[in-house]
Length: 108
Image 1 (cartoon, rainbow, N blue to C red):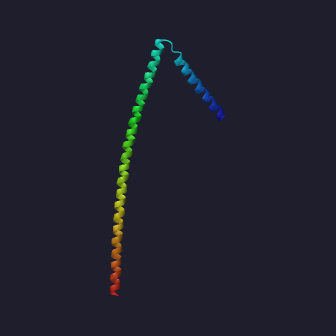
Image 2: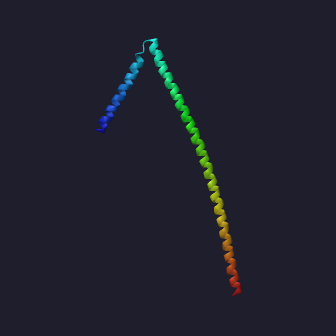
Image 3: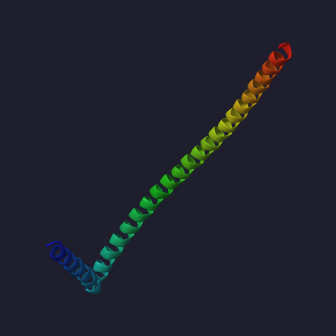
């Protein structure tokens, strides 16, 4: 059933393509040519407007991506700093502990 529907759609698409080709092939007068040209120019303008919108959206997405990358780098740097501070605190705590153990050993 799905294959039949798919084949029917393909036939309709092919038929529409043939009709469009016949329509362009059947242009015989200047008036018809002007109408066809007007239609094509309208499609061109529409395409240019769409292209401009997509380009603008792309630039916004690039800017947003760049901002996110900067934030990610800043966060990674912050985490690296926090890890270094934590390691220093551990080292200090370990040194204090060793000193306490050393002093206890000397008192005994």
